[in-house]
Image (cartoon, rainbow, N blue to C red):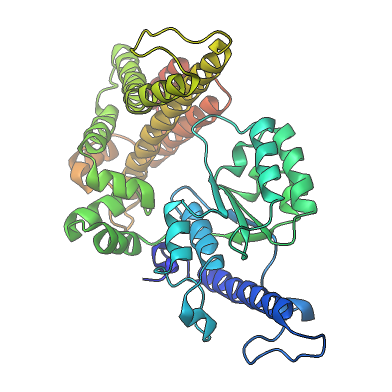
Length: 420
């Protein structure tokens, strides 16, 4: 399969990236031919003419910004483009489009082991100056494989202001064969000075049918399950896959969708809020159990600590262990907030269905498995009250972004949902 197959519902973006990959390949081929030429007067071989970039018509550039709503596939598109830039398929040399999906360049880029492709994502709340300087140093290196040095920054919106200023210099004056691929939810999430130096690609939420199709084709999920998951997540590819394959995710979502029926009094509001916070904390705990222990043991081994869980650390290494513990604590905070935000998105979808029923809209319900609850809430309320409830959920998400204490924010939301 081609590297573009998993870029769902983004035909316009895929066409632009494929054209850029062709021009990038033409440039590499022409430069390689020029180095191999025995004399300055040697004519390039057929198919090895100078790239279109030299005539000012190239679709390729050194910095790209992928934006789009959550689940639109920003990171997937960036990874696919990185793979196409590293494609070494013989068919490409004969005029085929780069990005076959099978060659060593494509495969290693997609799985994250290519020497010239750096995939950067963070489990923390932000990306700091130190990490960004390391990336900038990496970007100045010549590609080991002779094609492109590609840096994929999946969470460009999490750069601190200082980190953004460090990145700006590298984007302004890139190395000749370095390509930056930045991903963010919207163009406003990136510093104006950085986004002005990038080619912007805006992705859209994929159609539900397209998401269901990729779940069936790529992940082997039953069509009925795939369709239900795609509809429930309204085209969010990652969440749809998790919902279709993870029983715990389905259980948590079912609990969230019961919340509107459990807030008849203040006691119910406070209890529902606490349960949402506890569920998010449980998610963070599970991630910690899966990752933190392994990370700690690997660091202890690297530092030469005595064997055993309580083995003594060598002198002078306590700082490294403290740095890891701080990182794990920040990751736990982000995991908890991401889990809570996911629950709030599901809650917004519930009230969207309520509003659709109240307005008599001829659209399929995203949460048809709880349509009895949706219709019950719809019949006992008005569209105006439903809109206020949706606004209350959005206000809670914004409060969490401003670092309001999660329990206080959720309690305020559940009280507002009760009042309507």
